[in-house]
Image 1 (tube, rainbow over the protein chains, first blue to last red):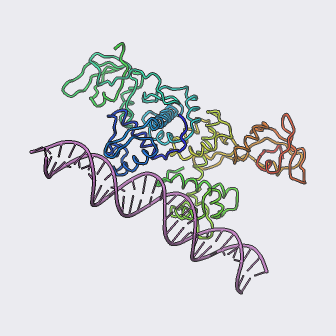
Image 2: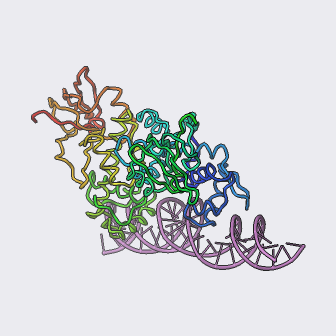
Image 3: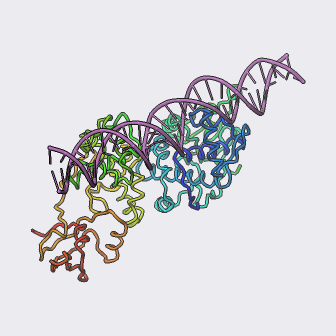
Length: 227
Length: 227
DNA sequence: CTTAAATTTTAGACACGTCTAAAAAATAGT
DNA sequence: ACTATTTTTTAGACGTGTCTAAAATTTAAG
């Protein structure tokens, strides 16, 4: 990441990060209301910030037309994501936090400004490729290392088998549920049956069989064996 | 450290920390101008902040009479100092930063809010008692562990011998100078001569003899042998 | 003890990031 | 195509933390 002459406020960084996250999952132009909801703020505040970040050439934005990141904005977003995920690895691997406990702390740590710190942390952690939830960690240039095949469990066929490669890290409750059923990254799972009437799935795990609602299954990502 | 209901802004924390540092070294009531200079800001800004922190019951302050920390304010100051010094140990011991490089980064990390993080970091580091400059690290209750005898080199007699226990970590330049002459915590030193006309000292180190100005000698702290 | 100098506080301003309420533009329904 | 509704932006406000300039207070000097 090249260093920016003007360093951003935490608030600005949070907007950039949210826009990046939304443009990864949803359509490529982000609406003001969607962003407002994600940031737990009001649309008018969002408009102000979009204007400011556009002035700084981090966003493409036209009135009433939604926004998207410029290459410069994307670079910054990736640097924040990189820091967030590296700190999560640190918290879990070195300080024995659970994967359900690290998000909030990493939200603070991701704003620490020091490229050198980030790079040395990465080395100290042994150049991890994914964070504790299986999300990939971009390198110093903002490039992801050959992303492994990751398919939502909900989108797999009956009879598919695979290894859990990632989970959505939205809520601690969800992650705590996964703890309780002993599902981790690396767990082997097999889809025994897909129940058409409610979209839930019967899953064979190492030691038992479990039923996942569609919502849960959509948040678990596996690498299927030989497709 | 008990958790405060109202969490402070970084700016408020920086004031608290500065007031603590000044009340350790200087007299016990801190003047507005002194604080303004230390914070690189204007006296009027300081007055505003003193008022605010007094409302929060972290300072004792009366108009024109200077300020000091309340027990509550002192507890917060110690928690910030604790975090700062633990992160410095992390940066030096785990990420191979030099003792002259860590201050700025630790100034950011000290504001991270999570008692659990601080305590786990402390355990991960092996419960260090001092930071890389020899400054003591308070425990979770804000108590310092039996501070070792530390005397300024400048205040020792000719013929005194001892081990370097700490250095003032004000400026990177000073620390880099110490790097250059290979003076570290744990180095053995002996005062060969004190030159009365300029206050400088002739010092014997492990491999050579060196001359310190009074200013330098005042910033190096040793534990003298059997006094 | 009275004035001069230094320090400290107040008053008024500004940038930031947020809000509410009202206006403007886009979208949908008929 | 013309309302009605939703979305988005503007306008004006507020709290934080800062500033400058002016007023108040304390300290120092004669």
